[in-house]
Image (cartoon, rainbow, N blue to C red; front, top):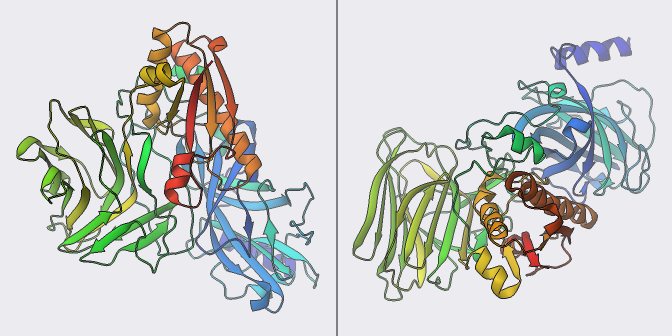
Length: 559
């Protein structure tokens, strides 16, 4: 009778499960997971080991509930889910159920301290009764000591919640732990069909995720959208990397970071530590793998903690405008001020319709340009500007909007971001200021080493982002122009996560850069060697967002 009830419950909770196309997936945790190290809302990342067609992809999820043994009379409970598969730079929504667990030492069905892992009900139903994750699916009766793993379904259905419980003070899994899952797609292509990288959609602004305020989540930057390869053969030869020969992107971010903030060291009930905010209260929102600083008000000013800017610099930010009524016309203005408080450079954007925005730029008293853009700012928008030797360039979603030369910009002492949002809100997902440096050929010739933060990868992956195109092309052009030049390509990471995994990832990323240069730009492979150093050679301490951003890099060394 108990077994029959369990089967009926499973059918009710997972309608259509029989028809779903499930595959077995083996994944490796990329960071620690446990009742002492994890908090509700934290992101969970794992690298796919099997099947072969998905190897190297990442699965991403969220910690749903954490309760230590002391709070539940000796029972520790950890609930989490895997919600997204990042395959070929394209997100695929998934639902997973657990089949087996091996800790980082290779021991089956136990956590790092040897606590037994079982699938089924047991004592777990009592331990988690009333939690947001719901009850346990399965039906092993009896009261056993140790831990239990099951799969519950939350109120949103479709996303299965993995549930672990133990009669102990804590549960802990270290990076390198292996989870065997039964996985299926949630409305997208069947996972069994993803034997190679899928055809990527045309580049478009990404929808803003749904957020929930949470001070404890710490996540890497979200992956960017991909673009279709104009040369499929080249893309295939490069291991399904983007076809950089077809991409027209020319923005190269500055190398010496002056300020970087992804709000990963900001708590939900505290002001942003790297900004002075006036006219409103800044709110941290977390969800969908993104941390976002959100502000709203009629006369808001945010001032980054910058001690001036050099003559040549870049600024980048991802932002989104949310909520409000259609008639509200938000206005955003970045003002770069002299020490006397006069505008040296002014970038103004103002909504004129649901998807129409005017963009106006001036340097001092000189108007550099004004245009109307068809940009849906309710979706994530990538904004970047670049000043270099009297040349000013502005980019929106990777497209060059303005390119003006012989511009005289007075020395910049401070920066202000002024906003008038009405009943809408503005959310920033990251902001980066950096000093521009000479191009690749000049730098490698003069110093023998070129350090770049402009070669970007999908989270936890060796797949290059399309935004890397300008830097990749400049390196390829330098190699093509100098047939005697030989390079060692070094990958570097920050210290977040497991050191061994970071070392492996840095090696694979360096190899990916070589692969693209060889396959897409016909550079002789004998001229390129690769190495990965993980987090062993930091440029700055890893205890701030800016330090971690500075340490994530690729270096090219003349041989």
